[in-house]
Amino acid sequence: MAEKLRYSDEELEEFRAIINEKLDRALKEFEHMRQMLTNSGGNDTNDTAPTFKVLEEGADTLGKEEAARLAERQRVFINHLRAALQRIDNKTYGVCRATGKLIPKERLRIVPHATLSVEGKEMLSKQK
Image 1 (tube, rainbow, N blue to C red):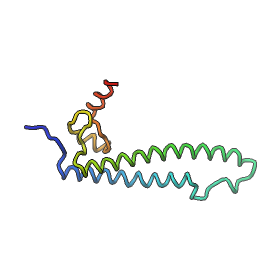
Image 2 (image 1 turned 90 degrees about the vertical axis):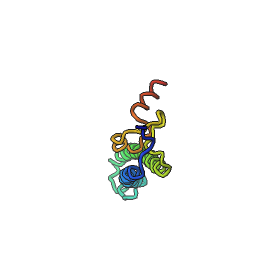
Image 3 (image 1 turned 135 degrees about the vertical axis):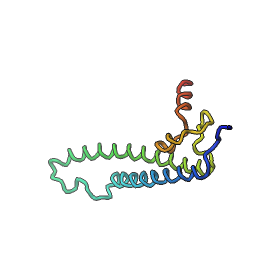
Image 4 (image 1 turned 180 degrees about the vertical axis):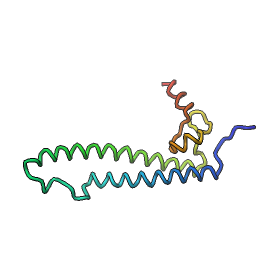
């Protein structure tokens, strides 16, 4: 029996649903982080006693820097999920870019934006 070269349309739709669910969640988290960064919630140090204001502003700055890093990671994750949806539309989703073989369904259910199988990752890491 010939090795399967791509996932069926039904399988691709299953993955689309998984990705869309993760994308919706990721977009909500990103929006929450964005609101934290822009302080649209209105919680700032403007009403704090002057003695503690300097300490709170320092802590606030550190918190915003961490939130900015997390937001950037989330933005990258969102882009990876959108790229995976594009691969579904192109019917190339689930094909390892290193080996050309199908990435196992179990891996794609856990990491739906994966472009490498475990074998492909190992192959590329040996080349480095």
